[in-house]
Image 1 (tube, rainbow, N blue to C red):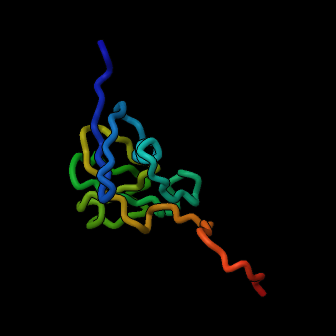
Image 2: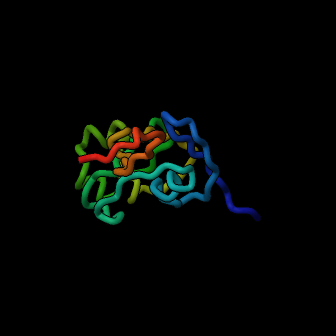
Length: 115
């Protein structure tokens, strides 16, 4: 019998991916091409990877309870590195949780040396 799969949609990107249950939201986001911040290495101690489940949120983890307020948890906020996907869901990934590259890609140059 094949294992059940769940559908995860990320907003605002609109990317949808089908995965096995019990995969962390962080892993699913990476599979969908989204790089979420994890300065703590995914140990659930920094709170930088917070995402909001707008539908299909699983029960909060102990780390969620330590990093998020009761109101945030009630509104569907979870730590992507600690929360496993348990059913079809929609996850809003705020800009503040995405990894921002420090590199700039130059598309043209003036040919002058900088000081």
